[in-house]
Every structure is written in structure tokens, then in C-alpha cells.
Image 1 (cartoon, rainbow, N blue to C red):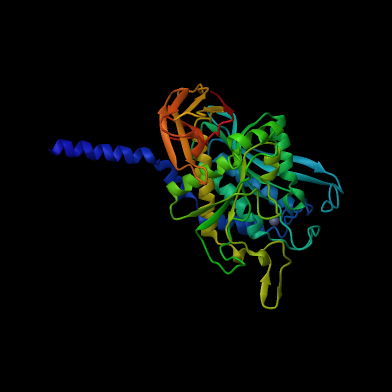
Image 2 (image 1 turned 90 degrees about the horizontal axis):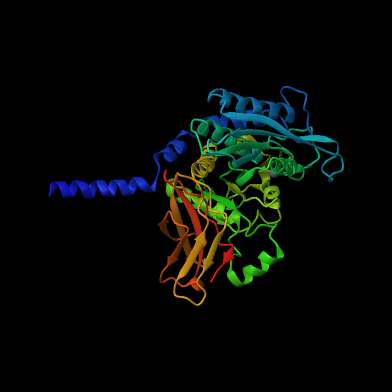
Length: 445
Ligand SMILES: [Zn+2]
């Protein structure tokens, strides 16, 4: 009797362990709000980080800021046996490129690559922005501390590098500070061009822009909720793909949306105290961010940010008017919240970089049949445990049902009518980590 009890207990324990991974909890625990606070203060302390600001001074302007960011990445790399490749990636933007470029300027990004052991050319990216602004977007001399917008995202990317550099991953992770955001997303455009030239296989970018404000202009104070913005389908899709969607579905199932769902699920699993909001749009109403150039180039990309913005504290001259304190200063940043959102990034960077690649193309069939059938090309990787089919009601935002089907290249899901659900497929590694979901792109009879 006692033996039976023990084995049942062991079975339950094994089952529980298989659901989560201790390393992910360790990553969450190791993200430091204190270090993020220190870095946000350092970044705000450069006075202005406007893209067109001073590049010569050691203490003020975007030049000093990017040299400091590079030195932080270099320090992290020195502590992990040179595990990071740290470099500047830059492009010259000519005066008049748009109204906000009032003189020729080098838009300089700071890139740190943690090379994957098995898939060195496959990348998952976390970005923040280096640059800041005040009321007049062309004022590059007055103080623009940009503490929340976007020293918070930049500090998060540096902190994620500190924590994740203690581990080795199968795919590569990039931590990057992008510049030229406020002048017209120039840094993101430059890095996507560079990525295309280098033939990088990009799984996606998690762009962090304002991850430290918990007191909204709407009066809401909330340190748990945050937003994951993702566009529905890539702007690069063909007319044929657009037409086919009308008959087979997929209006809300583009690659960026699958990345957003992946993050949402991981946060629900490992950080149940947080409330991730899947927002079904590219970005806020009529506003932009640095994931967009990646989307424009056909890569998956999402924006992570606070749920309640405060417009008196972004893009504002520092001043007091009618008792309201305007300006994006350090006092308004909540460092614990910024640390939480940094953890959100870190656990998803790690999960994707530990997971095997997703299947490129999934075919689906089942028209006028009582079952759904799938076929795909298996990925050649001995560490793959198998594949998992996901499905959900057509009205559901999340992949609510799943079935692991083993290391096979086709499967029939019996008793499920294709018309009533949407479907996808992920790859599961022997280490338990899983790829984002691939939505079917072909049909068969
Ligand atoms: Zn901004």
C-alpha cells in the first residue's frame, strides 16, 4: 500500500516538474530593480540623449550615453568569458530626411549578441531606445532626461543581458539600444537593413518602450497590468495570401500575433501576479515604436509597455503649469514595475532561445470531414521531442487547447470539425521548451 502511494506521489511530482522549469523562476528572481534604478538614473543623468545632441562630451548628450551603454555591455561580456559580441551599428541620416532631421547625423545603435550554440544565425531580440526628446522634437540642447521614455526600456535590455549571460542558449539573443526613435524610427530601420544584409534569421523582436510608469493620466494606478501590442498580419504579405485568408482564416494569426500569444502564455504560467493585455493592433492609436521597422521588413515584432501612460510625463519640457509637474523625470519611474517587465522579456528570450525552431510550413486539411488533418516537414534536430497541435475557438484570443502528438510529420485530430476552430503547431524540445506556434499556410485534401 505504501509503495503504491509513493509511486503515485512521484508520478504527480514528475508531472508538475514537466510543466515548468526552475531556470525560468531563477531568471525572474535574478532581475534586479536596484540595478535598473541605477541605470535609469545614469541614463537620465546625461542631460539629453536627443539623437542630434552632443557626441563629444563625456558627460552630456547621446555620444556619452551610447559609450556608457557599450561599456556596460562590455563589462557584462568580460564577466561571462566574452559571451557577448558588442558593437556599434550606424547609418548616416542626411539633413532633411524628414522635418525632425535638422542636420546630418549618425544614428548609432549599440548591439550585444549572445551567440547561440546550435543556431548561431537565429536571433530573438530585445530592444530599448537610447534617444529622448522634449516638447519640440528638434530641440537637441535642453534637458530631456527621458527617464521612462525610454531609459526604462534601455535599462531593461542591459539588465536582461546581465541575467541571461549566465546561461548558454541554442539560439542567439540580441540585446540592443536603438537610436533615432523619436526622429522617425531610424535606428530600427538601420538594424533591419543590417540584418537583411547579414541574412539573419529573426524569430522576432520584443521592443520595450516605456516600461516604468504605473500612474496613468486616467487616474489608474496599476503595477500589474502591461500591454503586448502586435499587428494582425505582416504588411509584406502577398495579394494571394490576403485573398486566401478570406476562405481559410488567419485575419488575427500573423507571426507577430503568435509571438504575442507566446509571451502572454509564458507570463501567465511563470508570473501569475501579472496581467498581460494582448492588444490587437500594431501600436497605440496613431503612434509608433521601434518594432514597426522590423514588421515592415517581414519579421515578427511586438511592443511591450505599461498599460497606463501619463502624457504629462512624456515628450514634455520640464516645467510646472497649474500645479502639474511636466517632464519625463526619474521621480515618476517605478523601478519594481520596470523590473517585472524586464523579467517578462528575459523569460521569453530564454524560452525561445532554449526551444527548437518552429516548423516553417504547416499544411492543414479536413474540408467536409469529421476530423482535421495536418502535415509538416520535421525539423532535423536530435533534441526535438516532438510536435504539439494547438486549437482554439475562432473568437478566442489564446491557444486554449493543445495535444502533444509525438515526433511525427502528420496527424489526424479525430472528432474535431475544422470549421469551428483555428489551429497551429509548435515544436517541443526534449528540454521542455517550446517554439512559438506556426499557423497553417497551405491546404490539402
Ligand atoms: Zn517617445
